[in-house]
Image (cartoon, rainbow, N blue to C red; front, side, top):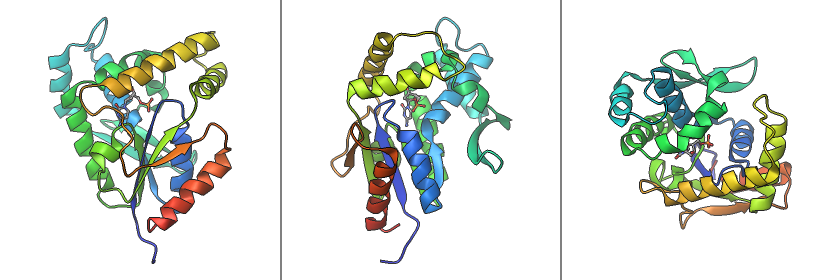
Amino acid sequence: MAAKSISIAIDGYSSTGKSTMAKALAKKLGYRYIDTGAMYRGITYAAQERGIISSGIAIDALVNMLSELSLDFRFDPSTERSDLYVNDTNVEAFIRKNKVASWVSKVAEISEVRRFLVEAQQKMANVGGVVMDGRDIASVVLPQAELKIFMTASPEIRAQRRYLELQHSADNENISLEAVAENLKERDYLDTHREDSPLVQTEDARLLDNSEISMSEQLEMAYNWAKEAGA
Ligand code: DC
């Protein structure tokens, strides 16, 4: 089969290494990587900047804000990273911080936010040649994707990975392994029990459990699936 530009949807639980894998796969295929979690974070940050989120979310104001927002990813060749811009401002330095992380799952529950972002994501992907990662990519955003991958790993391994990641981050708050595990459990529950577009493994998705395999092994596996799917 001749290579073509397919769409690849990667979904899965938090801290399963989705974005690392999606980025590496996009690079290997010469595709564009789209981090949809960053977009939910970008909206959360924009709402915080405008005082729409403080001790709670002013939902009407947040929904009204959406019409004033434009989100796009711009590739920076010096870092080889695609940075998220909200209304022409690079927000990468802010959206990974705890202040945003602690509100983003609440923002992601709002149906108007989901509709707004799904439309933007579908536009970004309509040229093909994309690897998109998130929670609802196979089920809602790109149900026609030629390859769908659902990533998982054991809760213990995910907690351990997240714990190590936090230890090396500037936001390290001396959090214990137990607290990290508890936090992951809560996020899994929220992601899978959300009323609008919960995280599910679609029937046509390939399961990638990376508890026992290395990054290069999983990349090889996903790359082979992409080739089988026509990439
Ligand atoms: O992948 P992440 O941790 O950056 O995602 C941030 C939040 O956004 C997380 O609460 C899940 C949510 N999310 C979502 O609901 N749908 C997506 N397609 C991507 C992320």
